[in-house]
Amino acid sequence: MSDNAPTGTQAVTALFSRGRLTAIPRKAARREQLLRHLAETLFERDRPYSEREVNEALLTVHEDYAALRRHLIVAGLLERPKDGSSYRRA
Image (cartoon, rainbow, N blue to C red; front, top):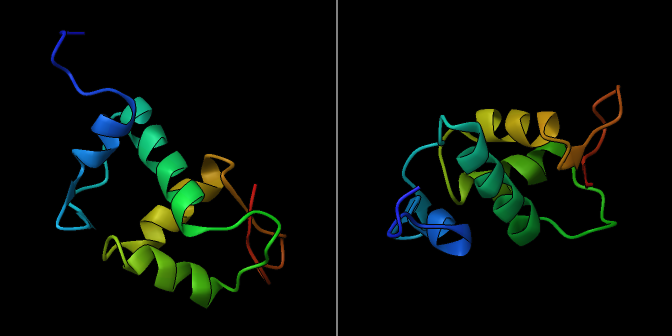
């Protein structure tokens, strides 16, 4: 990794333009950083969210809210019961 490559918060900030996510990173490590940031900034701990609330929160940063929601669940950052009735930050 080069000395001028963004790390941590800088790496996540570099993914946004005018408060909007420019693209969902393809590289797993970079996507993981983004997903952690989204989980921490958009969702409170110990609070249940409906699917609509999750979608609306994710829409504030990117139009492909379904992909972001799926990535958050696969990464274990959002949890959902099998019936899909609610979501919680893990």
